[in-house]
Length: 390
Ligand SMILES: Cc1ncc(COP(=O)(O)O)c(C=O)c1O
Image (tube, rainbow, N blue to C red; front, side, top):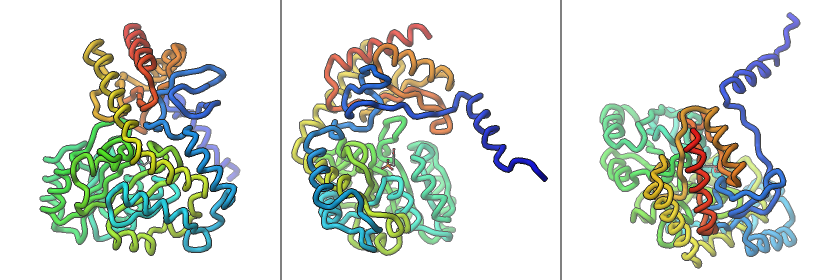
């Protein structure tokens, strides 16, 4: 037996390459913003989740620098074992205020927040119903929990109802989980209807507001606020890394839920607390989200401008969306890679998204409040040109 037990890795990579699924990061050489430098060239940036343009905002940078100078670079321990700072609590209070919930708990990433919340609230004798298009962190949270997991068709209330009717009575607790804004398609889950079904079938609901917080709702509270669902029994998860321009995640909900998670969520208990810099930057971002609604207004104006240019005027086959996330569906992974590379030649940075992230390859386009009209026009022109050569 002298076979190499690691030889499968190269073989696996070959399979990935042959399918055009091979991935590698592209390095951005400038501050985040509506235009970025990539391989020495300035490109208009449609590949960022920094929807409000806060990741490069001077006030967030200043807050991060000040917190680093005062508290150092690392939290030095888990929150329960020496890693807690008053800044963490200030951020949790601010997030609970933004989400209009009793309390909130800050995790080291949105991914960890989903793993921790889902795996804590359900277990072996329970049922999870999950939208087919949910983010990986929700799916892996469901797997980690040990609960029986069933997927319902994307945003399909009939399918969800049928699955509840057939299965709910066989389990102790039941949790319905869904992205509120779907990360790759940009559409919104039917939150009010999910909540009524949950009430009817005695289920909990966990909604991932990663792409909605700061973007939807009059004060940036996300889809819960947008749909008038604030105050209803609901577990809200989110990230500090998208519209809030920092890093980290959170769960917002009732005081009892948050207290329970502080005692049970392994991905919160057994990991180092968020850095002072990330915490202070996010705290400043929450303040800006609430005090500068004009950023959100500008973002939604950009969404309308892009839709009227690309979809209404030019009839481009772009998904219609209420959110800043759009997709250009393409026939396969190789085409998606080719289109992304042509767009780059034309000065547009938008990324090809391929399986296994999504089942159908596409270009994902995300808009920012800080894009101006010329940026959007250049995007529409480039898309029209690229598609005319397909
Ligand atoms: C819907 C959704 N949930 C959770 C996450 C994870 O958040 P984080 O980047 O903070 O880990 C992401 C993306 O990163 C996401 O798109």
